[in-house]
Image: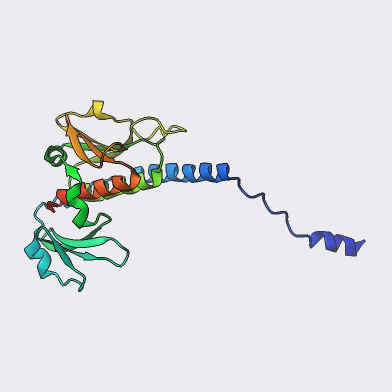
Length: 231
């Protein structure tokens, strides 16, 4: 009897059934929804450094750069080891390195409404808003981060928001759309659409991409220009 009990105790625990394709997709979607909520709660907080809109090629060229450095419109960039593109800008009197996912040689093909820059830097408050029920939430979160890290160099209060309720709702995240934009409050909407670029209408800035990957590029284009890198 004791031997039988020992054999039973030695039986391996039953393994959980593998997730179906639908269950995997749902779990992945829930992960990115939670990631966006965490991102909104933590990342979108403005610092006190202030925008430094005076990046220029002479300062960039004084910095020691790798051999694979290249120049675009008098701005010096270099290929980073992770596939991104680095450059330097002036921050508080010091040269600071920053990297972008957008190849600066492609930046000229992305349209930018200069009024968007004005409405961002002159705002008393900013909202960066996304659709929590959209697709490709992972890339949209990256695009939102690309913008918020640059705006975070300013003293402008910046709040993460949704264009509509999440599913399930996130009561701590405000709902903001272009209808909430005013001459003191600029709403930045990240969206996919029919073109890749940055447009502005009545203090509402649209960062758009034909897909979520293109949206990241448009976000970087705006970020470059906010730092004074006019490409």
